[in-house]
Length: 334
Image 1 (cartoon, rainbow, N blue to C red):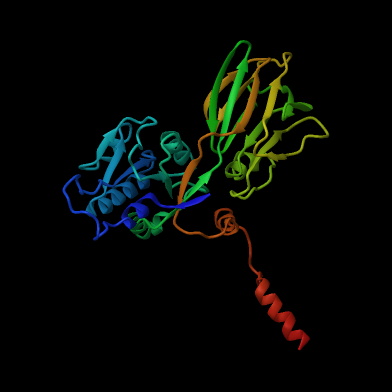
Image 2: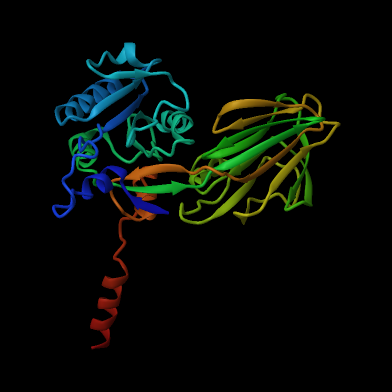
């Protein structure tokens, strides 16, 4: 799902010249604010963040920093807030400068408030990022103009039940259930929609969203799923079974795994490679469509196929395109 940027909408709502001019309320425009989330362990990321802050401030846009990063960034006149889920409140955008890990960290700060994320890749693949440092000026200009669209990305809600207790988590990319002891396998039974599917001995299971299909699930042999597809993925890791292939289920399904009591050492649940939870023998993990989407800002409306080609460096030389092939066939007929 896409929508126009909040900044663009606000600036598009100009004052009506025919409206009443009675001074019943203030007409002072609301201060535009952008949150910066930065991988301060990389010098390039700090330099990019300072350049972004300088250009935004020059146009009157306020810059907000996390208290855990402010000292390293040393950006004058920037506001500083605690690094919690209220950090992005009242911000029209969170600009994330780093790799996919930094974007996943920023998603923790923006999920409940719904602030869109725009990633500038200063990492490796940076699949979730929208821009590269080489395009920084154009990126900042787009932020200032509000010329971006926002995509809502599916998330996962995860519930862990152990004996009489339960705890919850969430993920944008994936929730992975992994063995706790390297020398042991997890003995599990998996189910879909409250019906048992199969029993496996395995290294783990990845439950993923379409967004996460190009991350851990892809490395484990799962399919690439286009972001607009509404589905949940289940990908076994090194399962000792004939029927242990990646599966794509309805977005309305409930996926679950139970760790059998005889599993030595139990397992561990990781949400986006973060927020671990211990899984003792007998634990049950249930995965459903998340109640809160993560909003990603996009500067270009190019197809996902092009993103795959660029991010993975896929070879496409020799491609002529459907239109050119049809033209060639027409020439042969005549």
